[in-house]
Image (tube, rainbow, N blue to C red; front, side, top):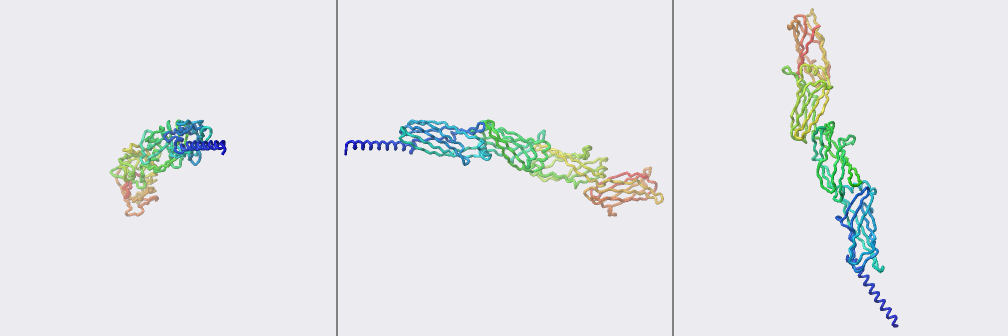
Length: 493
């Protein structure tokens, strides 16, 4: 073999060996992890929102523990969430020397406008996993060899508002000067990634969202755990509806943030259980009685308060329908937490007695209730159409017949009360000297016509023998069903 060919063959062999050594010493560190990139961990990532953009910041480290310097390094970073790429950026590094661990600052940005409402809702309230994909390409000096490394990891977004819960089971109702306060306990835990505060505007509506009961605003610092109450001030005119009516309430939460432009609205429905399940005044069972010269109207009632404890004071004024004349009043202290039954009694003076017995009318019951343990006062009014037992009572003047020596008169009325009357009439006739000159007694026991059912009209002529010319008569009406008694003076013609 010619010497030149031998030398060339030796040189080529040496070059091949050198290339193999370089290749091995280049690839082996990458295979063993001596050449790698470190992407920021969850704890090292800084999230930020400015104006309408979401930022992710962190440091990437390129570690070259290999045998040679790396050049022309390109690092592609892609963050995937909601089934699409949210952030994407390429970082170029001219070189990383042998034995160097080089820091590369990373800032990724995306617009919040690119998120749907549902995705924004998840960003605010839920934990979301993001896939972090990174790809690094680099070359060794003189471009002898290049290589590519891929990395993948997962970063969890913990949500701006990690926990936002209302505890409707512990909701409370208390009174104040303007009406009442509904206190709804809540718990909020917000993201440690952010500073500033979250502003939550709350509106409380009825189930149809046609009537707004109240509104309030909460300002909650970000990065903390907080437990407190949202207090809704209820106008006095609406307290009655909450006291008596169990219903669905709609809570609309408008959430914004003090340090960045992000807003979201949330709607939730809660069931409000009224503290007073039932308060029922049994007007159809009301009755008027007469005893020892006093007339009393009795009104049975029922109060059912299974969700309360303690006692309540109930004060009721009975007025005419225009509230021009207060007839009477009564008050009771009742036990709460039970289905309580009792009856109110309203004493009626002599002047008003005739009106109650002979004139159907509207009655207004002005009811003040004070729940002692809860320190809640509220007022409600009920109007009832009172049906008089002797409505439109008319008695003609007494007619005297000297031939038969009798006195007579026609009387009529309509029984507007809800129950039948078992009537008795006791008539005593007097002359001008107030001397009794005759009498007559009529009873339902002897005359079935004097049993007058509810809604029936009644008319009759009463005739009595007299010893002289009559001047007037005292007619006493008695009802054996209610013990009602009413006396009326009737003049003679």
